[in-house]
View (cartoon, helix red, strand yellow):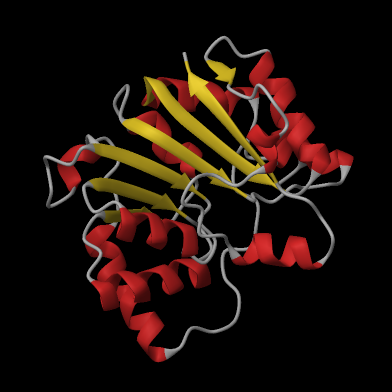
Length: 227
């Protein structure tokens, strides 16, 4: 794909890493189709608990540590997790299967293909945690957070809902803030430094965060409200 044809916010990372173990492959073949989100349908209708209090979305869940922890802690909330990387999806599927976390549904392709098919105001919270920063200047248009993606997210988020973004890359933090501040749909909630320096309440951490801290990078935890 040429740079000229790259679509902002689209997924450009690896789809698969090392070969899956037999049990993981079985989960990808059997469990994944059973809990994959159906495009075009209201997410709230795709869970056993149709009366769930809220529906939350996590885009790019990596190995699924944060998503699984939230699903355990909030059994009255339905979760949709998006992750095109097969090995990360397999890790989450194993946890879902082992713990019977029936409040999770997944999407294993580009989230920018799913979002336009969903109804307005479908989500009460959205997480984007440690996305690929695409640090080279010529690659920055590949970053998930873009003006176009924010427009899509604004449509599917309820007024007053939160968009939470965490990263250890200062340049990406600045990139996101620049786009949020010029968006008519979101408001940054921070009033003091601790509002972005301290992790979110109940934060379980992720392996990406642990690696960043080991390597001396300082994470930021941003919270935006859909106006």
